Image (cartoon, rainbow, N blue to C red):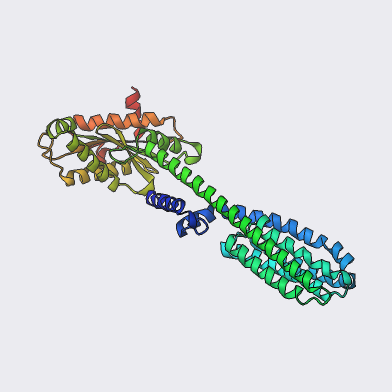
Length: 408
């Protein structure tokens, strides 16, 4: 995720937290992040709960045999041959981590299917005890709204569907007294309302906790990013430079891949600061940093402020010749910017001197020796008149040569 995207996400999170009424309807950006981080765990939760519920649903065959013994064979078919395969199909869908709509809608559907199966058996049986069979539907509402914790809109849909089916069947049971029907319906509606309140409260708390946690993580990332960035130029600082070199020098980074380093120093910068003032000097460093960043090749090249008026560029997967070529491109870009510098002994504009070195992490050369080699090359560029890259493109030697010179 880019820094701009992170800033946008932080803004969205803050707005969601400020608007307490919108906690159940995240903005598209926050919703995408929420599903990315919680979707897999949500599917896993539904699968586990679903399998346990399916097992319990089939255990109720014992109740069928006691209460509606006249259609116990039919109950066996409905539960094991109709509902169970559908439930297992939904489990298989959940194992594929479907979209939020498919995930929640499938759970809503199976809740209504289970309700329909129970009510079908209750209304089909001629047993005098069948009037007690349909009370098991309340478990469906409890399971959907509290155990599965369907997302609130889907919980509402499942509850309405379940209650509607229940009312339609109970009112038409011939051997169920009207007064008892009214009580049963009121109990079912009460169960739906109470569990929906619990569902809403739980989901709101979960989403609020997620937003607070996400905000804390984003703030931590922001602080960590600030700790790795030079506040003046926006480039990485020495701490970030160390982390970059550590990453390139790890065994998993591709030990045989060459790494290049370009050390850059602004020519006669003290004279610039003394005569133009520190604010102008700071602005000059910002412009140079921007020019350096503009000549990099994507994620392989990373620029850092090395200290004062010095910069360093670390080049992944880059040999010595390419390092010299990139350094020359940076030098020309800064020269072409023609930042006025009347107090330079090199030119009437700001120039830089650059030293290039390189190494392969698998060699005996350490990362510090590579930087020291680039520093040696930089001073060679200064001794030879400044505003140049050392070694020159036509005389670029292997970095090992420079490092051996440093060791001697």
